[in-house]
Image (tube, rainbow, N blue to C red; front, top):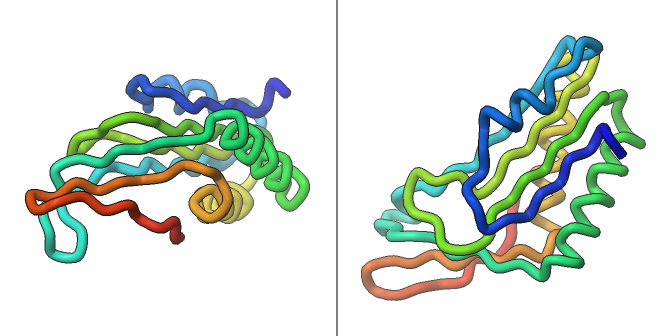
Length: 140
């Protein structure tokens, strides 16, 4: 499908390229969610995050989410990019972008995609602190 772009990569995600790809003359609304590595969780300083994925299943699940989005909302394009590997504070592990004729569809679809991705896609996150590491359960 030329209206869906899904990438799971160990390389840095390119926000500008994502914005350029999602743009279309039919779209009156574009919603973009950019997840970043924050510097603290529950009052503890975060040193880094490690993301691991079961790639074949993760890609398949992201494709399913994109198809569900097209089935539920009148959207033109869907982009889902996710990083794997070690990320430092401030880096971008996930970008979700949706274009639609109207903003409501773009907003609703973008939220649905990120929430569903966190619940169903086999990507795991480990937070590293000064006093140890912990695997984080997926939650919206």
